[in-house]
Length: 462
Image (tube, rainbow, N blue to C red; front, side):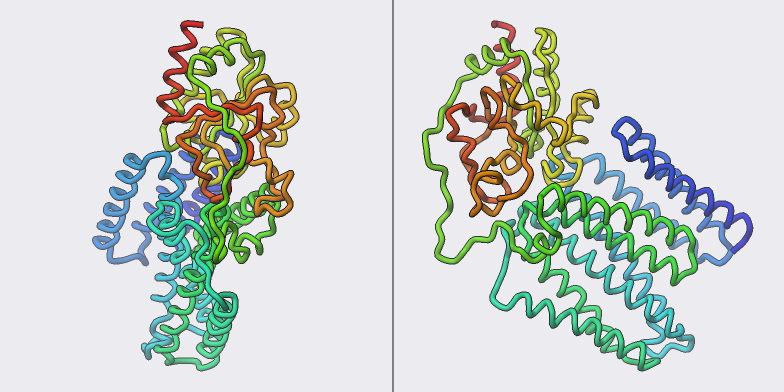
């Protein structure tokens, strides 16, 4: 490595660290992304000019192809589909790390002239396993989030034993490949196949409601695979970038699990939301009260404090601009308007924050769960827009509910609750919400964007 390359990699490292630091706040996140992109650009340029890198025409074609695909995808993807894109791109990172490590050690397994030593082979096998698990798991997460496959857990008898056997095969074959010294190509393919099958078996058994945690965990695994690849290639930038991604993903996974009040083991192996054999779908019992737009507009106009709770229904309707306009209308009347953000609202960490930031909602209007929950008893109207599972009081009141123990937004403590929803269908977890039959609750059925637009117009006549 030349001196120029070393200094450039150092600059890249500094940009990565500064970029991640600025991602801690919504107010600085945009500049943080620019710093991270600048760091990656420096790393790419240095890789091209490094004397040991070739062939550059193939690399140029790969960069152009990847850049075009990434740019087009980022511009065309809807905010509702952002979690799917994150899952898919994360899987590509894990798969790339696995392919690079496999390519470095293929001579050892298939009788090449220059075989890597045992230490390099061990690191490569670790990377191949972790990268393959991240790749395959991310694909399943994508399919579940896109609802191209069953979003509820897919389980079968003896599944945990199958997972244990696959893990034993990965470890056992890996030890054999290192001990064998060379050859063993078919066993390497067994090792790779078992890693992919393990990821598929574990992730299909996880329900859609747990996907935010799964995406975060798979992101951490991708970072770990990238860091291990950096050790294999003696590339400091890969090591540092992978460590940053792995550490941040691990911390976020822990925070998300804590927000759901469930250990990670329960997320991975608990089959949350599973349909039991012979059991019919749960239904909400009680009387559901409906409201019309004029009644809701009158209620909001004369409220002192309104707390809006955005959920995936808001994202699906692409109603973030309308909810901002509603906020501005009510604030002009002297109403204290705030947003309550649950850590796992939406289908990925920070989904609601990004959605509202896109509509230029001020950051100081967004309140995390711990800060906003004490305010609900003093709130005149809680306006729930498509949020189901994170407002379900069964998490507090019903020990038999799968949600029991999960911290929720205490919207049922507000004086009045207005729920904007398309229908009485349950949320992504597949669990009905008794909030909808609360005597204080009124349902305003319809598309969230249309309902909010009508509310804005009705406010002009109040």
